[in-house]
Image (cartoon, rainbow, N blue to C red; front, side, top):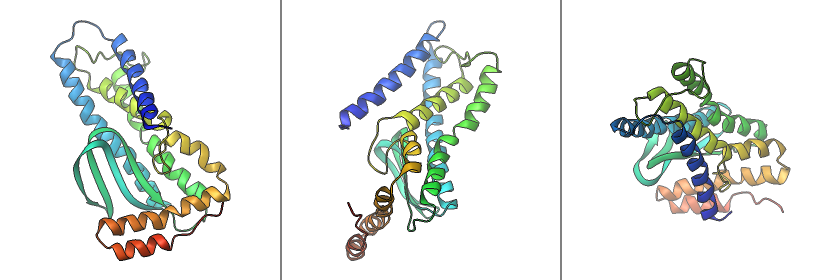
Length: 231
């Protein structure tokens, strides 16, 4: 899918969500809107981190290698090592990506599916807690007005819901950056060719890490040694 169609889909999804929020606004706009927008940015950053760390943690538990975790898009703010994994933090926390790879095919569909599922699953607990705090089970969604009053729980709830929608229904990307919803539907039905293609990403990612460290000899050796899927 062309990049502009992906961006258009994401913008339409975000715009629809924004119109929904606007339709619930009550009273004149005031400075609390700015406070709530800043709160939205902060909690979105934390929720994207939680989502990607969910992928990484479960990936490690099931024996996958976590090559890197990227938080947000746009201008780079930080890059370094965290828990033996390359961590990259960018300016806009609208999404993230975690590079997971396996060196063996043992139960690979189940292991990868569990790691992918862990990302969206991290939204369920905050969603439930924020719903109870903001709505008290009287309305759905909670009636917090983020346009003219302080509404931290409602902001957290809506930010969480939007990120969950983007992770499940965003437009598809490359092999490692497809939305979680697409991968959860596809991975259990992978054929042997698709499993072989996924396993081939391990030495490719390893070669990329050597290249980033400046060890071009090892990078070339690892890339040339990667298995070639038949097709």
